[in-house]
Length: 445
Ligand code: NDP
Ligand code: 2IT
Image (cartoon, rainbow, N blue to C red; front, top):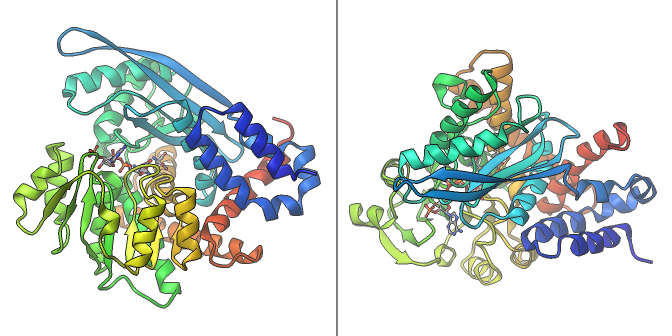
């Protein structure tokens, strides 16, 4: 007889055959939940827990018409997938990138359920975005898109309903334009988005939170294995929000970060990445990494992808999904890399993950390692609710406490099921346990 996990995996494959990223995310989670599901098979099956947790509460798709600088009307597709609100309002970012489709938003929304649960804060799972490409657009075009996107999205969100935030292509500028439009439509100033500017309800340390949190967890992990960040060589991919603040914190901890990358090329800088310059190129000028290389004699620029071939102790993928493949994993192991922690969502393919784990690399997946961003978003929601703002130090200390706690929770969960050192399984199990408990308590819904 087929196990319950295999039955549901089969069902999910049939129902979502054209969504490879969603299937990849569900396969990883359900496979690692096997011991928990086997221990509770009758109860979970009777309550259709796995069928319910893999089917979003609702998926909203809509037209986003806007006018470009030439007066031409453009049309994009908007998405919001409200996946599971068993433990709190839907929470998750908005991705603006031409590759966005329903399957990608579903994979991100599904992962968000477990990640948000791991933070220990009361937030459910959701994700949204659009196939809009912000590259090369004027500020006015960005505003026109964001206003049109929010005009429709505003019908479905709210401070106690669903609270979107940033992700790839959505930063402070976009959140500001969307917040302004929400306020105008609803006639209400409420904490409906996180990642807001500091003058209108944003939280100190939210900008830095994902990257800093990644390093707080990584530091705790390697500390528990008798090592420290001091003097380590670190390879980072990406050059956006997560990559920049991961690099900054790693350097503050005494490590040397020697790479970064964007969608067209990558940098090897043996002297260590100059974070101020990287910020200037990416956050201010919104330019290519060629400009970083032009301004920095020690930096070598290469077209295409390639950061994983650089020798390192620690690798931190911080760009996008499926950017670390089996061959990259082999290269990392051959070069002596001891630790991989994911700043991005699902950057490592399943075969690459298994190769790293089989070769003794300490591997922590994004659901645990990058949870600092959404955790600090939840702290922003708390501050909005009490109409107060906390100091940078207070938020940063809470973030650090949350990340250290996540490491120990996933480590314990793996040990409880006889899988010591399998932090992927530990994270999925620890995240799942709380959600399933809430689902069972709330009956059939
Ligand atoms: P940004 O848009 O700030 O940066 C993304 C970076 O990755 C850019 O350097 C971009 O290159 C590069 N990139 C994006 N897509 C591709 C692609 N298809 N191929 C190659 N490079 C690519 O996004 P974030 O830093 O916010 O997000 C990075 C990752 O972290 C994503 O997986 C996101 O889901 C995840 N994440 C983000 C959180 C947050 O708080 N922002 C929280 C948790 C996870 P270019 O500069 O050319 O655009
Ligand atoms: O992937 C993620 O966790 C995010 N993009 C952050 C979501 C949030 O609500 O802060």
